[in-house]
Image 1 (spheres, protein in one colour):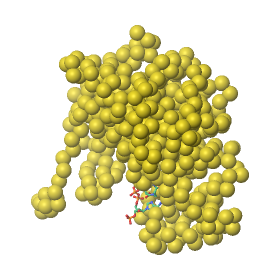
Image 2 (cartoon, protein in one colour; image 1 turned 90 degrees about the horizontal axis):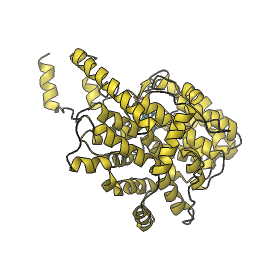
Image 3 (cartoon, rainbow, N blue to C red; image 1 turned 180 degrees about the vertical axis):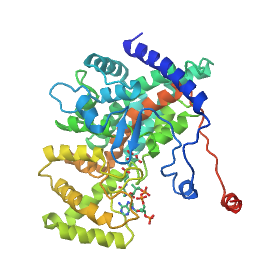
Image 4 (spheres, protein in one colour; image 1 turned 180 degrees about the horizontal axis):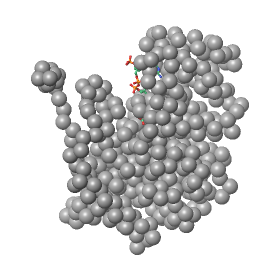
Length: 433
Ligand code: NMX
Ligand code: MLT
């Protein structure tokens, strides 16, 4: 038994006991009220999900296992000569709750390297898909195609899965699947954008380093990939993709079905597609104004857009009410490596200009740039096609979502099934008040 498995086993035993005792004692405590507007408006701010891996503080931003973005970036172990931590270290933190030592990260790297080889049929399926297929859909199909290899699903078929051991099978699937996702993604990238010129893995590299290497993109893109995959790994499991993964897994679906559903959840322009929307907006500004864009012109463009009822891409957030520290971390990377990039200069100008304008519209609850604001500009600076951005988002959410569904099984969380209400029931309810 590996040291990692032993550690997880002991944590699961302790947490499960704590969790069950807590539930017995406090199950009838009320934690809030539900307004009709919340049910109808996307359940905004309703506390109805459970995860122990992270929590979004509207002011401070994401807190992963008790650590802020800055703390995580500072405390997690890093590859030699790297400023950004190992993605594997963030996975370790999310799944165990502890900052790993160098040795503990090394163990995860070794586990991932042993398990990342793709079955041949995955390459064949990807090669035979239509040229027009969206790369993120290719990723989702490739993951689904491996579902019959799920250790969890096979054990379930044989009647071996119980509520005491379900987590062990889920852990096997998570550790088998997570390292394959970046390999599939790099293959899709080379297939679609680099004339099928595939690059073989480099066993000496960590996940972020190898991902950039297999895409064929030079340093410091590996640094940005590590940063990006950590920053987007988990946002209290509540965004569309993570929540979808959790929902599908709640019916005891395996990790393959669950994460590919979550990855499909990234398709929409308000979530996984938002990076492209924001990138397109900055690109249009650049193409129309070149370097004539000033604060004053930008202000006028934004006012006109708002008057027409259009949204300013890359600004606002459903939960956050302050600057997203994940945006600030990317901005810092940009300041260091993209100072002369024309699009980055526009994003910088926008950061100094747009929040003041949005603040005047009191209905807009968050006037600050969000996580998707400049990610596309940075990926594109290193040559990534805008249609590939969502694949990179998928790689990131897989880190947290897979850790989350492991814990769902470890704590025996039940199938998720909220109750719906009709408009006449709501009328009736109000009459009795
Ligand atoms: N530009 C213009 N109007 C906005 C913006 C914006 N950036 N953000 C919010 N609003 C409007 C919003 O459309 C709504 O108007 P109405 O009442 O007329 O429907 C009003 O302000 C209240 O919305 P909020 O409660 O502040 O935001 P909500 O939680 O509904 O939506 C977003 C959050 C992120 C979907 C929204 O801010 C938005 O559409 N932003 C632009 C698109 C974008 O950047 N998406 C990326 C999302 C990724 N992320 O959240 O990190
Ligand atoms: C995310 O991390 O996906 C975005 O911030 C959206 C969210 O958390 O609602």
